[in-house]
Amino acid sequence: MDWDLLRYFLELARTGKLTAAARRLDVDHTTVSRRVQTLEKKLGSTLFVRTSSGMELTEEGRLLLSDAEAMEAAVSRVQGHAEPPASELGGVVRIGATEGFGSAVLAPYLGSFAAAHPRLTIDLVAVSAVVSISRREADIVISLERPKRGPFVVTKLCDYVLLLYGAKNYLADCPPLDSLQDLKQHSLIGYVDDLLFSKQLQFINEIDPPDRFTLRSTSVMAQLNAAAAGGGLCVLPAFLADREPRLTPVLEQEVRFKRSFWMSMPEEVKQVPRIRMTWDYLREVIGAEQSLLLGTCRA
Image (cartoon, rainbow, N blue to C red):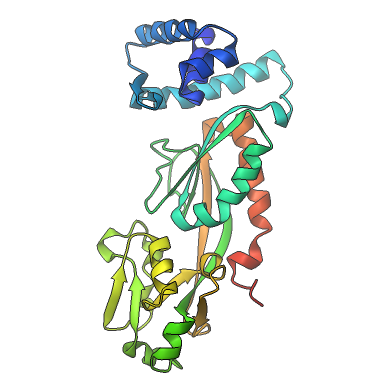
């Protein structure tokens, strides 16, 4: 395999644009295009497709990307190159996370992190779905469940708690809520059961739920906004709900769930400097957010 061709492939994969890759390689964009086409001919595979937003990796391209990055790290070690300063690290790091955690907790940190590294681009995939590490949908995945198998580096990132919340105006106008039995007289907001993306979100069955849901949604942010507007009671992560002044926790001792976030990355990319730097940064900053994650910051 011609390492020179792979260099062009890597830059185009990281930037998604011929002109941007050309600037980083200090060549003309037609040179990048020709080199990538040569690589595709050698492999007998189409590695990129042109879209309205740029050059997008095909499935074959995504498979090659992890191997090419591993080869990049190996070449650096063999040649004895010193790792560049963190400020000079460039490329794209794609992070997959749940919608609420990605939006409320990760996004502020990652925005500052990327701003401090001008050559680095962070793709944050914050969705109400599973971002697959086995299909290489992201370089780093933060999930509710620990990957069961595969050549992955996995660490427990943090624990977090979920409590039952209601809007202050809702609680003022509704029947008293002094015990779990009182829940029958209230309306609930929650997930759509048959569209749950993780069994870790099946906590409603652990309490005696009300007879009626006023709203069910696949989006935790939609649930939070509906609860804050007075639509009913809702089980929410403390790291989301405690930031919303319209919400207050109820039955804190009776309704309390603890869940964990797991962080993983493919084994072959653990030595890629920009990915390792991002991984270490996430472990450091999330470790400092324990009071928010565990619902103790209100106290």
